[in-house]
Length: 140
Image (cartoon, rainbow, N blue to C red; front, side, top):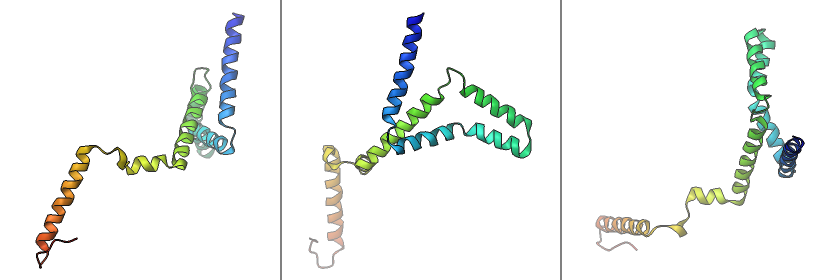
């Protein structure tokens, strides 16, 4: 039993050490705080409703949501960290310009059928342009 408890404590501590190594810069810590506030927003909204309008159902709903997130098996912190790290990864890709390449499409990896289709479209456009010219010469 003691080995199991030590293993659980070691796992939890190693998880928090990993989170600390990932969140050393201030931007990631701010992002983690914002994500935690967003995920816990139903608690805040129900609390504001209760204190503003004195609706008892809002207090009960807020406490129920808070109670769910505080359960030992609730994934609040794991969900917050995973969303934070995913957004951090997206920011890093945007900063390096990888998202721009993906959105614009990379012409180096174009398939041969796409290149043939583009050539046919440009030839067709050149044929139509030569038909429209009044002197009968093809445009260059």
